[in-house]
Length: 591
Image 1 (tube, rainbow, N blue to C red):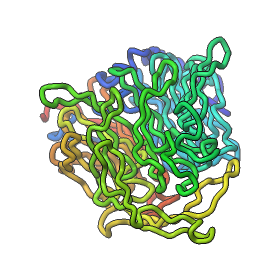
Image 2 (image 1 turned 90 degrees about the horizontal axis):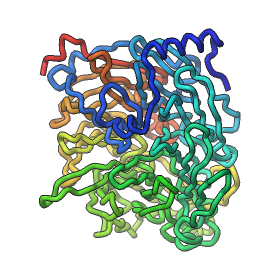
Image 3 (image 1 turned 90 degrees about the vertical axis):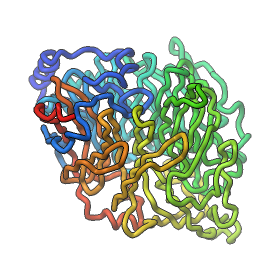
């Protein structure tokens, strides 16, 4: 692995620059207060609850048309592909990751590189859905991120030098890491990727200063959790209490449920919220039962990794609908009382509102135009399955050949996939990047082999409409109403930002950064970055000015798995750039 390719002189210059910019250590208090501060961004989600809402108003509906590029930084080289990273900003320095497990520190005033780190990846990495990385974590004087060969790397944030590297799991068994870590109560919290390879999902806590394990909690029923004290591994209870309750035979041993999107944290209930991925294999007829804790949201105690509660969105998932999408905490008033809620827009097409104190189902409703695999949700939020051609057929009924094909809405890439939605504290609405597509899906015989794809299914994805696939939706979580929508020709695959300036930002595969009126959905601004956008925008204040930044570079799962949809996007340009925009100071008073 390499860091600071221009040698000691470059590292010294980087350190001098960091000092001159007034670099300070990132504290637990900084992270917990991230949602309230405007001069830095020190957590993925712009706050540990993941609302992605900025209280800034300098940039607003009256003046967003004057937003101008300030600088653009290229990740360089031939390593392009999907750029899904969310930048972090501290003391005038931007920290951002890029495809192929690269990390950069950039002078946020000028766009000049301070340092670069490239992980030396082995040839045998097996990421299912492109060589992406969604970002890192800042803590103390460290920048920490995960790599495609399932390692964690901690770098000195001022110099880019390696402080420690830890192996999280065996990449040859299909494990990888693509999510941004989370810092909670002085602990480094991470998940793992690899659900298509029959791995076992888990959430881990480590000492951020050393990388040493503090606890580990598997997200497949039947596996033992552990805490670590004084270098000793201590059993801390089996996930779900015992093996085999909701899995047949030994299927739980390769059960999937990857925690590949990372998590959020709610200080009010002192709970980590993690989503879990598909059960393995996709062929659900091989594993009758609910298959806990796959395709679920789980609340985890950050002190020891114990599971507090769980809510499963797709029991016995047979469509690869996963359950990893972010669970965002928010409060609302009802009958004169404050409801501590949390919301998630699931790949299966339903939007769920839960009581974040105990996981109880409050309400759920479709947020996409068409759902065929289920007829609705019951009073507990459990899906009411469509028993007539809703689930792909059993190969055993076809003498071991391909099972009966069904047409399912939405496609397995989801009504919403990884791309994070935003919640506005002003409008009370969620802004959901979503897609309208279907799939032909069928099951096939399959057996587990370490490091090999463990699907037992085939599929073809198709657009649901001729005119559009992507839809940015404003959704009222209290009523289920779609307040407004913006239809986009290509699939939306990037995150969303909401601001107190009544703005909603997102990027499109066509290459545009766009801004909308948060109340009406009117498109107010667009800028062509020259390459497809699948990153997540952020905004912050520096030297009294408001900035907006986003990583650009087309890629991700759509061009790899999209079937007929991939043909819609085949001519979009790859790339690798961080674009940073600024509102001219003479336009700030326009509100």
